[in-house]
Length: 278
Image (cartoon, rainbow, N blue to C red):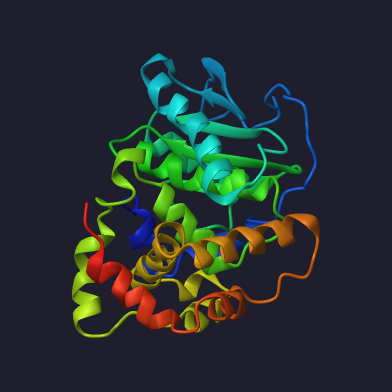
């Protein structure tokens, strides 16, 4: 069986089972700790261990060539602080990297035997966030995506599914490509021509990853792009919404806040992408 890309995995519905493993992190600061030594060892031999910002990385291969990527992930934490006003990670995040797909699959089968295989996975295990991936050509995209989830959940007790995935889709690209060069732009132009961008309420209705196919990921990304780069009132509504979650205040629905901040919300979304140029 070939490994699936994240969008292929979602499209096939396999992520529904995986979602049961993704829970929220405790909102407290935890000092860096050694990586646990209790992981199954039948399929791997850990040879390198490095710390990069909040990330504690353990790998079955030397990590030297990945230093620029992990420096980028450390910068991602600062970017989330800048754009979303979230605090620094409240606890460290374990990142486990395997040499190849076979050893990665074996590890996930040992740890999560009921979860369909996927090439990158973020979970909460033993009270701490963990990311599992393996070395391949799209590793950087996978790590940026899953580590965005991890960083958000160190401080937020919950994030609506569509928003969690929309933010991860946005930040999965390198910093210089996020605003103008995300692959989603091409298909979104087609969707926009035929009026196919759904309302934010329709995205809020999704509560299980099995309901999130490729289009839903793209539309969640579109709303996040609008909130980050569109009119200031909608960006402010997003920041205040996340702040209320962090403080334990009932956040309500983000759609209600956005409509209050921008009464002609769908029209403004359409105008945003119509006028968006480098």
